[in-house]
Image 1: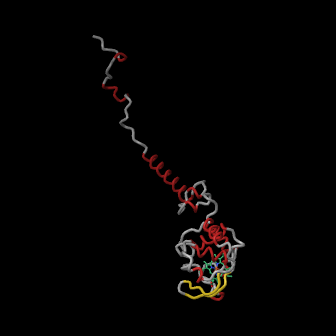
Image 2: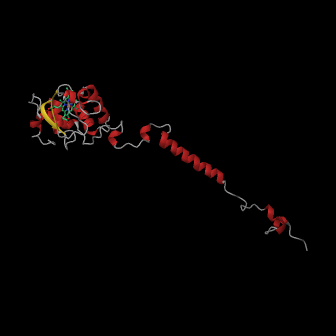
Image 3: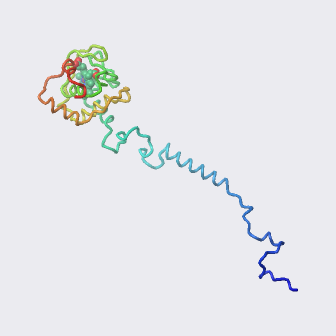
Length: 208
Ligand code: HEC
């Protein structure tokens, strides 16, 4: 009897098993995956810590939306710091907001006037100035602050007072002052020319 030829065979003869393709000897390239994971980690770390080739704003953890410079114009705290320097508040109240006993200028850093719940009295002080006895954090002062209503816009006054109330370097953290608030007080007090006294201001609610 003739042996069946191999070309017709359905089964492979046992002796040829080694020639059948088999995946049993395949092993995954572990080193490749380890290297890939390492590169992915380095890639995200570069993005996170050195912001890759993107603008730092893409990755930096901004505290709130207003501190992102491209949203809503200049950051009011930075803009207000510029006004504080340029308008001359700094000469009397000093760069660190401590005021200056030699000039009779009370402190703004941690001042109970500055940190009041609302800015209504502060807006009036900047618009028309202030003079006479005033008690700041329990200490008596008696000086003369020039008015700024004629030289600063509503926006500049809002910015400088937001800086004064929120200055991170002075540790102040009160609410923001908006140009609309300044505009409203300016209109309400349009007939006023005299500097304010603390006694007059204390009759005005801090949020009005
Ligand atoms: C010429 C010096 C001088 C300048 C400039 C000046 N201040 Fe004053 N400021 C004073 C004095 C003095 C008082 C206290 C007034 C009083 O005795 O009634 C005062 C009071 C204040 C108060 C309330 C009291 C307190 O200590 O919290 C605030 C707020 C204030 N100033 C903010 C400003 C801002 C903002 C500017 C700039 C736009 C400015 N001042 C510019 C001298 C000055």
